[in-house]
Amino acid sequence: MQNCQIREISNKQIWEDFLLECKDKTFLDSWNWGEFQKATGSKIWRFGIFKWSRPDLDPLLVSVALVIKVEAKRGTFLFAPHAPVIKKSSDVGSLKLLLEELRKLAREENCSFIRISPIWQKNEENIKIFKDLGFRDAPIHMHPEITWELDISPSEEELLTNMRKTTRYLIRQGLKDKDIEIIQSQNVKDVEKFNELYQETVSRHHFAPFSLNYLKNEFLAFNSDNQISIFLGKYKNEVVASSMIIFWQGKAFYHQGASSHKYSKIPVSYLMQWEAIKEAKKRGCEIYNFWGIAPESFSKKHPWWGLTLFKKGFGGYKKEYVKTQDFVISQKYWLNYIIEIARKHRRGL
Image (tube, rainbow, N blue to C red; front, side):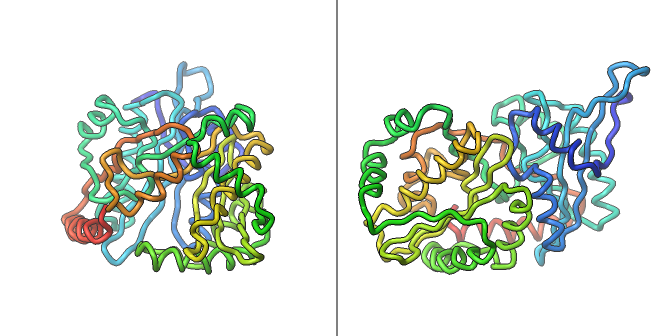
């Protein structure tokens, strides 16, 4: 690795311009996600790996990784979400150099392990790369390892045609129902309206919620660049569904969603999702990412069963990444391991 160097990047344009050239990426790699992490009080590093093709030429940026210091009761660790981002399908050298830097940083920051949620396609070659470097599968995921994406470049009519018959029918029924109204907002005050439904969804599905402050900070981080919208779905003037959609570098992400069970047979959520897809097309996005889905082997008992069926109904395809990877730094890691195994069991994942 004599022709490579890792250093921090402090220039937003350099960071974002590099990501524009990369195919496999999500908003978790964006500059603004790092700004959001700082707003929540987390310490972050933005690492870039530079490579020289010739000694007389300037080095080229070939890989980036946002790294977050996570301080939790179960342990302190370094976390790289959907990283490292590279131009090629895999780059052993970049990952090895990143690991060397993170091992030093972990000891300086008194962290017990390093965790990476790779943005690399799940295949035998990439799994072996992580294993050979000493990583092990994490007991629990931090961000989706299986996502559902839809190519939204076709016309609206083509998109509707390619949907599940039931989904298409419900969208068209929603369009006819004058009691349904979909509102798009860039007002931070509407995060509170989202949160009211979100807390109801939490109590129904029993997952660990984000705080209102967390949701507001996420919204504000992306709103400064007009990269986020809140969608409010109303039925008879009552908000019964809501979502937060992030629009970044030609992709839209259905990151946060919530709904009321009060009017479960009224297709507000279907119409709201369709309006979000249409807004993504208006903004020039080509991909709509529905975020996480359950594994293929899921059953009706899986907590994501209904949501997975809902997302797949819009058409699209699955993308699966290498499982979340841990690199053990100290024996304190195993306390975290036990706690997370128990948490995974409780959630039924």
